[in-house]
Length: 372
Ligand code: ADP
Image (cartoon, rainbow, N blue to C red):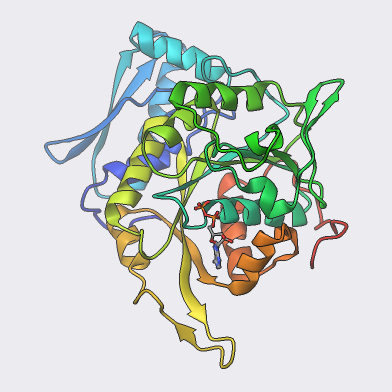
């Protein structure tokens, strides 16, 4: 979202722009994610961007300084920008080197997974898993190689949406994730339990370890995108999972009842902390289309999404109506047969924001068995 004229507080626009600034030598990583931009502040009506370098006298210093200055200046026209260069602290350097290798502590390298997109919500029951599933289906229909990691350990629902119940097999490369009918790889704690209905009552550290194992020990194939269904909420549980994985960006799902500026701000803050992009907000169950006359009914009153995203400076990806057909398909494990114009447009925007996974097929591929 480019601002025209003088933005009120240009800091978030600058930070967001810097998230798009890739390290020239570590192409998949951006400066923020690497901890190279510890601060953006305002001082005497100037924007001061701190650039922290692992080695202060690096030959690339001038180049990096110019890159940061140019990117920040473009994001806040009318504001003078200064770049303050300093050396990283030992802690910052340690984080830098782990992230430069593309992973968090304890997380193995998986160069065959191109993009990791996390789907988050403000609370449970707003349709987070459904959106994660729909996004996977939309990406698959476009011919991308897709996996879903169900990180909602205490409320796993991904296998049910896809009607997948088989236990993962043992393959040459490790534990083999089951595939859905259209070829989406799926991993969920539900697939490991002797009884799918048995509740999992685990706490943070154990959940973090399970997620790391899902990442490290599952023989995921070459994936263009791995979609992570996070635990509900924008607090600790979701953060723990995100810190366990090299997430590239987040999609926030809310319902009109749950939609509050605070939820959006929290998600934006979390994304910032992690140095990843918040691709935007999806408002689910936003309205109902009358099955008889097609008229739109705002069941929960008029949506405040437009106003709130504007306040919080977060993109609005779109609205999904309440749709009994979606609920029925999810219930029957047939989410892959569901297609709707409103979600296709949202998926298109997200895939665009991911930067069109590098391996995207030239033409749309017909996926066997998928609804067209
Ligand atoms: P969460 O992951 O946020 O807990 P789910 O995706 O499991 O939420 O959805 C909760 C319930 O709402 C499910 O039964 C799902 O089928 C249903 N649901 C989600 N989105 C919609 C929608 N747009 N229209 C109708 N039902 C929906």
